[in-house]
Length: 364
Image (cartoon, rainbow, N blue to C red; front, side, top):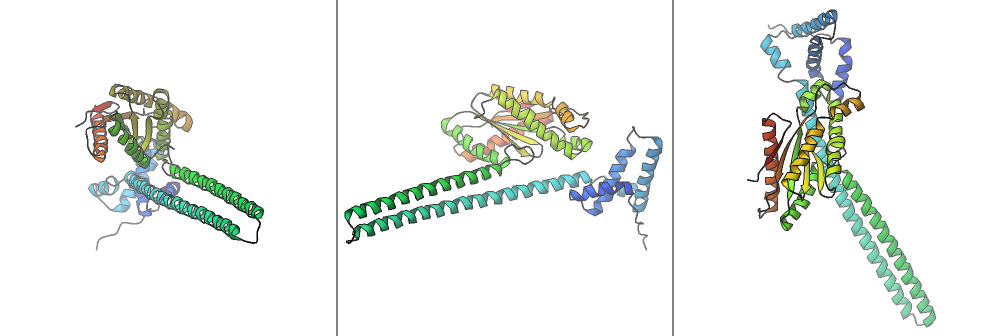
């Protein structure tokens, strides 16, 4: 009979770590693995004393011994399925849930505004019909004088018009409120800039105009280099904070100072990826703008450090791919797909060149 590994008591000092792991969705059976990694990193920290290091190594030895596993099994259990991957998986799940909720919210908003329009339209029509019938009945009343008929008819007409005007105003206010709610549903909650769905709407609108009018449209795909490593070094909370700074003090400031606000859109496309649409101009101008963003990104660690209070020893960099829409496509959807594909290919090439570069991709 195979001897079962003895259950070990997790050190009390690790309880806060377990609690944090539970709050981000890491199952209990993975806590031990996460604690191991924490202890492993701490034990290799040169800034701690020898006594503390030995104590941490002792905890590691205790964990290893409790598993009754050889080195290869140990590596399989702890190193090939790290909590970092679990966290990333959970983040992806949450992002998908957010997208689903947004879609449901938008559908609900569209249904709401449709219902309101139908109700208000029916109400106004009913009101006008009732008023008209009342006026007709008054005019057919043989016992009423012409003066009375005229006065009553005028009063009814005024009342109907006032009610109709009020109904139209209320409907307009409701429509504005619904539209504002719809816009908020298209904002990325972390960076407070347009999200992937909003980008799709602008691509369809601006891309369609570019194809009809035969005017330029450029797409930049911007990816924060080594964000996974950054999150490992400083934690996902600081990583999220860095993404906010990149959007606010990096991309948006550059666009505000160097581009027409009515011809430039920045959106968060994915976790560490931003997209920028530019209408008009030329490829040289788009490339210069991309270079400004790339250079600015390298300076943002100072802002992240100052506002977060965390010492940031890594420079934040960004790789950018640029493509221009092919205006020869007969089908707009094919043109949009090709534009995204080419910008993505340019970004991939920028990564292959060592990151922190701008690459322009010619249309295929």
